[in-house]
Length: 360
Ligand SMILES: Cc1ncc(COP(=O)(O)O)c(C=O)c1O
View 1 (tube, rainbow, N blue to C red):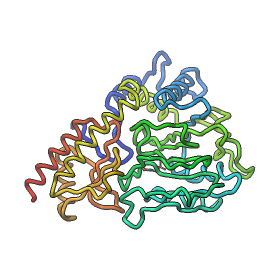
View 2 (view 1 turned 60 degrees about the horizontal axis):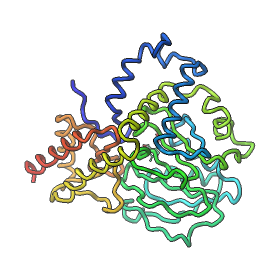
View 3 (view 1 turned 180 degrees about the vertical axis):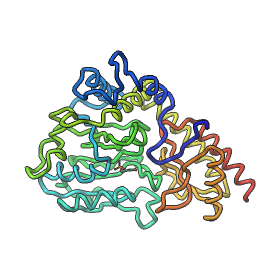
View 4 (view 1 turned 90 degrees about the horizontal axis):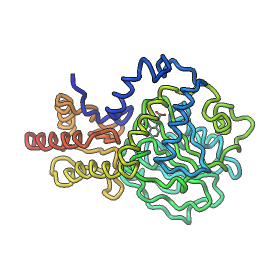
């Protein structure tokens, strides 16, 4: 069977070129005589891989020198707890913008260790927009200010970052890191699970400003202390070696496509193809406020749940898979991450047009 266009929200498509390169190196990596999977993480060969991954990520995200890059395990979800455990150091207060399922999961973890204030929420309209914020309501002495900058399930994204002054801005970028240019210096901490725009599940990237490292209380477990991983260059214990190797190949792939600015242009073109059609269609609709629409996750609905189901089934038969919306939201969702070729989006829109004609 040929490869399909896989619209999964994650784990998601990887660039075919990366998979093919990894395949050629799967059994023997370079002159090492072994697979990367079999290699000691302390070996010279592997050191070059992890250092290369970091260097290329630094290059493509333009990460300033006063930021540390970590490759951790535990998924993006572990960061929900590591952030308060490490960043609550003075007031033990945090501001959150509540934009959906992933902030709903993150907030309780911070509440275990401090005080959380919701300074904006879009819960009133099923998280279909990014709330407008009033700076006057922000907690001036908060230890951090938390956003999920792209909401995978709901399909919204922050276009403008909140101005948090001296309060470190923390962003869950799991579902749109490397998809558009971000000014890292505006953030105290950025984190992202790999399984959408970085590589296979199993590694989580954390980018943290130096001055925020080293404040965890003594009782914080060693593995949950950022300092442990900074001091050991992500090698305190065995890192997810193969996932980091694939991430390195993905970073190189992004670099060679014009870096993140190049990626952003491709992503804007892809998203426009789909959103423009959703605008003109009288059959399919996007439930998301126009100005807040994600470039990566595009939820949409047909006129009925029965038609949604029929659409998903028929699309799958046509090599357009994993289009079912999240169980909490229903309908459809097309995740069009960096690795989704423009042809995949064009094929989806052609199929939607045909389905609309046949089922109107
Ligand atoms: C925005 C966002 N944050 C966090 C997570 C959780 O990631 P993980 O499964 O790596 O813990 C996801 C997973 O899809 C996500 O989309």
